[in-house]
Length: 220
Image (cartoon, rainbow, N blue to C red; front, side, top):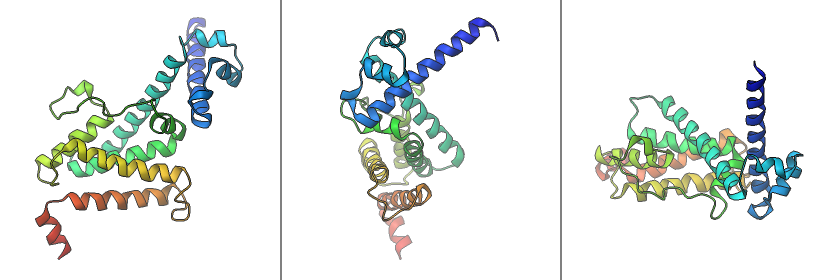
């Protein structure tokens, strides 16, 4: 490895360290605790060094959120690939729900910065449509399009894909937040147990959305 490559590698490693330290400060102490001085103390570098990488606190916070969404996107891809290309839209939808929860379990600090702090991130702020450009797709638009496909194929009986996606997101997010906050400790004893509960919740919600004739046949 050349000296130039080593320098670039060291710069990238320090940039990652800065981002992760900012993530930890915000997750542990809140937005108001994040400052270049506090960050410098955390990583034992001067504030001037941090300014070589990030113009200000806002730019740094945006990078934290973007890194979180990159990780969430990777997890969504993993889970949808796991169910396979022949999976139905409803199976893919549940895979995306699992991806969200697994992301939160494996990246709790990012999850808290992205979704539990006001004004940090906005999901679904742009309308997502099945005919939208592929390059504009992210985890949220994937969810909306998957729900729309399930509607189009008659697998679920709902009127609005985006509203339905929000309801499903609320279910997964709510249970995940409760678990990470310790409120489900009397009910579940670890990640595997929580994921089993989540599967039950998603299945129950999906059952309520099935066409009435299908649901009636399964109950009888």
